[in-house]
Image 1: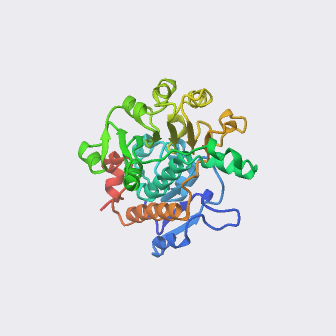
Image 2: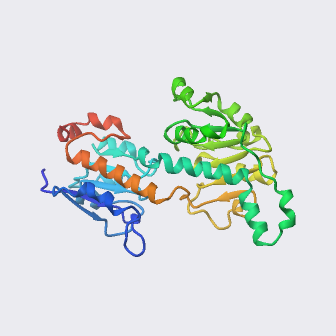
Image 3: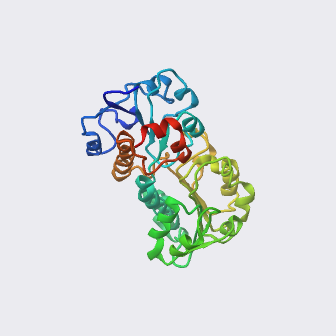
Length: 341
């Protein structure tokens, strides 16, 4: 069935309380073509429904889930789910592929904002920013010498993953004269060499790094990738940083390692349960920096993500394959092949 307009729904969690969008409105210029008809979805939902899939040709999604039920209703016109972010664990990828729905994400949008956030956390941990803020507010200046920071020259940064964000992090770290190390079974050695990254096994990264950063997606293989055994390998002076996904890490094991001072500290932007429960014991620790899964939320982050997602939608409307297709197999689906030029 042909539709007169290419209809686009943007999830309502991209709006502030005053009704303005969290991304620069200029990003919507991508939809200035009269063939497009876009709107913010009328209701706040945690999961998009079959009714949404029947109403729109494209869904631009921040947080709501897209499930098999979303795609299984009658009259579905949905062609693309454009995830505004790099992670897609909230999207049923096999269901998208089976139903001929293209799923895209925005690695070009998150690359720099997330990498700079990790650099921020490395600096905050190494300079003991949290405790120095606390003693200053409490007038405890006499304690200054007891909270000496750690210089970065010659220290080792280890990354679990050298993909989109991990690679950008190492590029940003280049001027700091640190040692670069990573575990990633998928990265090509020549790509790592360009970043001056020593590829090795996971255990070596954990043993030798002064800062261990999680930069891999949440998959069945990476769930609980870091648990008690992994924390036991780390130096007592090392720091752990997770800005990826909470379930990649065994949170109870991390808490134990922190309480027993088997590692020096941590910085967490993600948790196993989100929003994090107020009685989560990690929140009581003074050697942990915590942020609400938004450390990278800047104007740059949202502008880049919106523009990237909207470009993917525009490509599908022009009967072209988008650049950042997650489920590449969907391009072989008969429905998709019939829609693309």
